[in-house]
Image 1 (cartoon, rainbow, N blue to C red):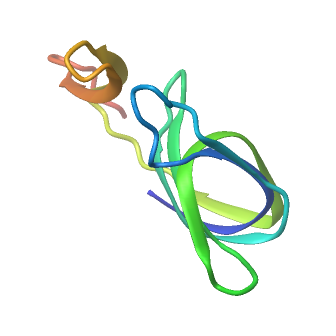
Image 2: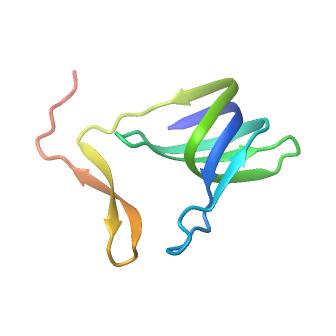
Image 3: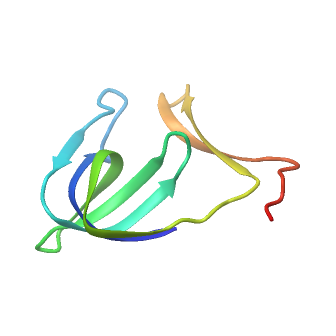
Length: 110
C-alpha cells in the first residue's frame, strides 16, 4: 500500500519500452530516497518504484532486480481477499497486461 525508505542499488525497466525494445534497463548504484513503491506481490512480484536522488531529481520504472535497502524500508502491505492478480500476454498488443479476477466463493479469513 505504501513504502518509505532509501536504497543504494536498483535495476529498473524504463517506461519507454516498445514491442521491439521491451527491455530498456538502467542500473542505479547510488543513494536514493524511495518516493513511491507500488504493485502486487504474487508468485512473480510486479513492482514499480519512483526514486529521488541527492538533488531531488526523480527516476522511476518497473523493478527488475537488485533493490538494495540503504537505511530502512518501511513497507505497508494490504491483502485483497477474493481477488487474483495475474499477468498475461495480450496477443493484440504483444505486451504483458495485468488482469484482476474475482474468485467466487473465496474462503473468508478469520
